[in-house]
Amino acid sequence: MRIKTGTVEGTGSTINMDIGFIPQKVQLINIDGDAILEWTEDIGADKGYKILGTGLNELVASLGITVSSSTDTFIGFKIGADTDVNVTAETIVYTAWPATD
Image (cartoon, rainbow, N blue to C red; front, side, top):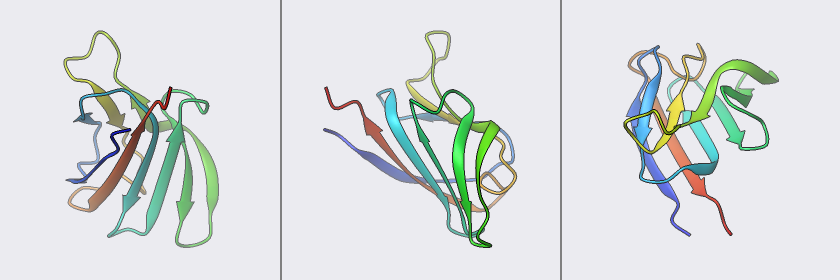
């Protein structure tokens, strides 16, 4: 199993993450804004479960995480423009897990 980790700076717009495989699970942590977004393939495209430092937990129905498709020019996932997680100039730490079959 090859877990991929790294950091990316938030942009406020969709970010394409080319990691070389389609993940089954992704976790994003905005270390500057105290927000976490977790996604698994069971949640569905453009969604995620968000946990904020304020204690708010919610399922986001849009602007979350989506895996790349056959029409994309990269292999990996997209970070949506969620206003708590993908904030311009704030650091996002990501971990992506591949399928374990």
